[in-house]
Image (cartoon, rainbow, N blue to C red; front, top):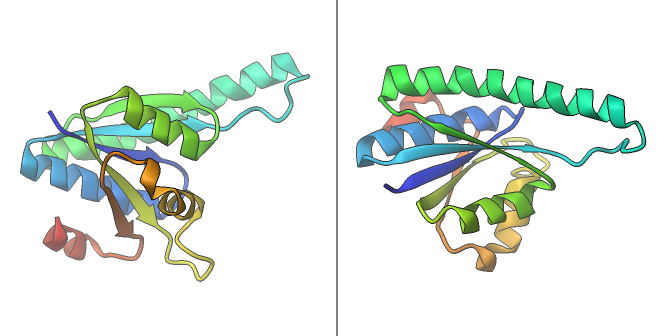
Length: 151
């Protein structure tokens, strides 16, 4: 089954990327894989604190995932899969694509801020030759109705 890979983060544009991935998966008989990335710890010398922060990050990701997963199951009939990786976002996205051959499309949300589309979109589009799959970039300011029309 072809999977749509979408990155879970705390940005507003993430919502549109999630919606688009779920709608496309529902219409094409595909699946959705949600990738959350925990950045490297900055305070490695505080091992006990780092462990607590790491566990809290995982719990926050799982709660965030469940909100999207419930919507995908209830509204789109898609049961998403959660993958949590640790490291820098772009290398981890590329590694996940290499590791899971069922991933067919990377779906990213683009910020509608004046500062550009966001760091992940900017970095990946500069290194697009490293990707073996297409990228769909979903504008962060599309309405639900516009998303439904294009998916």
